[in-house]
Length: 279
Length: 90
Image (cartoon, rainbow over all chains, first blue to last red; front, top):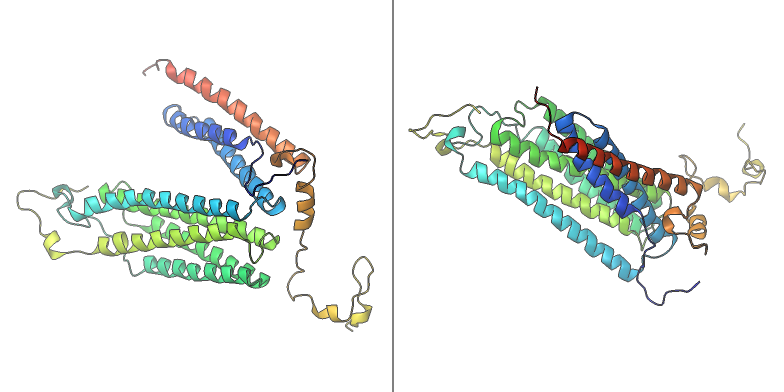
């Protein structure tokens, strides 16, 4: 067998980009068919195909890195750039929703009562569950850093414990947020307040679930002895993603939960010529 | 009465060395490191691409995925056909 004389990774031909593309096609067209013809088959097929693709694609990456040794230092550098660029794209994704929130809340229209929160909206108390959620995510940032140091120092049991704790904190956040969603006195249909609140916090919650899943895979790999004290980029990528999720929450908490719930006496004065419309 | 360390044996009948009686953690037994075995399997010079190099399970999962891919593509084209005809208004 001819051996390569360079440090880069020439990947084997793979079917997963094709199956993933078809999965995305079925998911999107399936969504349209569900809305117009009330059939969920195409949508479900797309979801299953996408899940199968993700499982096999990432399984293959673990094989290429951990079992075949393809993740040399230059290759790992590329993986690092890739993860950083991906997280940057996610930052821009959230930036859009923050833009929408500030657009509507900095200059509330007469239809809202000329104030923020709009007339008729009872915002959530930022010093109750939202504050607990903030503490939970900040604590999980500490435990994931503890896990990283444990891995680097070769402390296997500690790494497993701290990583497990991080994931449990992630689940606790998701549980608390689900409770908040259920108990909230307003819905997504309650005007621009409801839209901006639930779309921004909803996408954040989805990212918490994705991040928790990524960390859970890392826990499994740590248990299976995949990580060494010098080489554990999969874990580092998961930790970066987790810190990103934490930072997005902090911005959400300060902007939407805290600043967005404050009533200003100036903003509360209705414009004389307009009357507030219940939205 | 608790057995002496010299008398303890593994399931395969080997005697437990004296010092090793303190080597196990108090929780469940540690998982054996199977990475070297996997490295041997996936570095074997058999010309197989990584997505089916793991064995029969890989091939079955690949076939199932590709079947869904092709069937799904046909099914989406079927719905495209249906959707492109004018719908009867009730």
